[in-house]
Amino acid sequence: MVGEHDGAYAFTVGQRKGLKIGRPAADGKPRYVLDIEPVSNTVHIGPADALDVTEVRAERPVWTDGVQPSFPVRAQVQLRAHGEPMDATVSLDGDQVVATLDSPARGVAAGQALVVYRPDAAGDVVLGSATIMRSGQPALH
Image 1 (cartoon, rainbow, N blue to C red):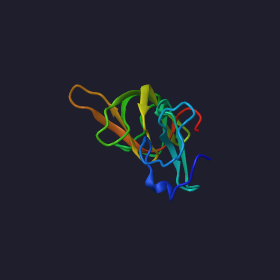
Image 2 (image 1 turned 90 degrees about the vertical axis):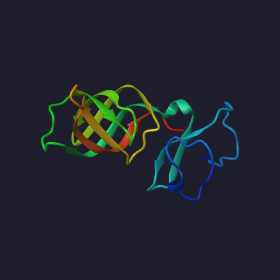
Image 3 (image 1 turned 60 degrees about the vertical axis):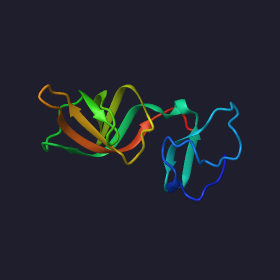
């Protein structure tokens, strides 16, 4: 344990300032919020590079036309409102949608929407969306 806080609700993934840790990291570099577990009131912190993720898992998918696409599918995904679309391979693992990103994304948080698009010259087509439950990242500190 590095420190205590008044509640996990006061933090966001990627946050650097206001952590009130009280002592610097051993390497002297800033620490960031990597993950939040509201049920246990735990906030995981670590170095900036631990914010980079290449796999995002989401639950409760809603398919735009009511029919699940044939997986795996090459698509673009958006991980937050107003975020840039990212190239990915999207598949299913049981009832979870899994987006394997071509390049790492930073600061992906549970509860955000994963929106899956099929790029089209006439306008991108939304295949569906799901709620992000976790993202793949190195071991938490």
